[in-house]
Image (cartoon, rainbow, N blue to C red; front, side, top):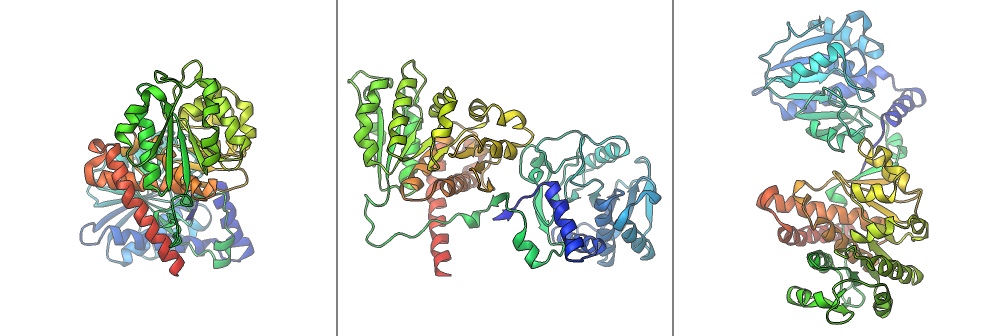
Length: 520
């Protein structure tokens, strides 16, 4: 897991290093620039990218650029450095490093337009603006950013592509499109959340010399879940199906039976010992022909196609049997379905069962907001942006700009786990750090991915994994499966059956990581 911090938190960490630990700001800047230069050299070799142009701003970002230029020059690169504005406006520690650069024999040319900038460089380095910029770039900076974007040679950015705000997922105006971004000490939200993240390219975190004790006490408000964190616990040699997890999945309506089949198959692949699928009786033959490893529960008269309020009573014994319940895949929005959902959820909560509410279940839940506070900490909600907005209207005001903030605010309305699906997905729960998923790609942007996610969640819940851990682990597994499917079939051709097939490999790898983790 990696820490994610806001720009304000990063500034406080810098002050802590300087004021409490006594590390001069100029030393932090030297570390930042030097490590960034080394990272650039690893990715952009002297042989292929000998000519480098560095564009620097007047603040700390520019200061990092001055150090990078000096280190690259010493390594043999042909480096040219340009300053946006007047040299007397260079501030703080950046001035010190500008002077060192000049005394090292590397001139810093000031520019007020693009006429003197070289168009034949092999690599451009953007050290113009930092993470704390608010609003769109204007004037000279906007001009320089547009000029960089017009170059055919790659451009890399220091800390963040100039023009972006580190705390926003949005692109406010002209912003550098970087081939790589080298950020200082911690990831910022803009590095991860689309569409801003799309401009960052390959992202690496640079060590700027924070002490070990400071590393350990750093902010834990948000964490990036990495593939190495996806671990499944081993199972006892005498494990049997009733102890491996009993899962009940409730849903289905005309035209939407596929949602149930995907959820059920995903649950079995993810380790559920027994899976029951409840569906209106008239639709049961469809499931019987597809699901050969899961049990089906036809509900109502033989001609029944939709859920009705009184049919929840028929599921009581199955709810009692289950370790966890998934509610909603393909359930539908027929007139009586709302009454059925209310009655079903009441039974689930009364029995204090773990549950996942997805798809149409979220639609019916959004029509009775008062129930959000009555959900328990074992309940997982899996909304996409539209469903989230219906459920948490006030929290969703800035959803596009800061989905992590919207998710955090929503956790104040319910004790349930909130799994906000997006690019990337965010998992939150009251008094827990936000968890951001690092896996996944556009192959998941097709109907059925959410049903697979609900099946994975249901399986993990039924096996005894806590709700919060279940949600972030399930997101990681689904994303990993999507990545594997895309590598094999591409993001266009891969379909849900390919994702299910790839999920087997993702789960297997997570199991291996779990065993290795225990062994160590």
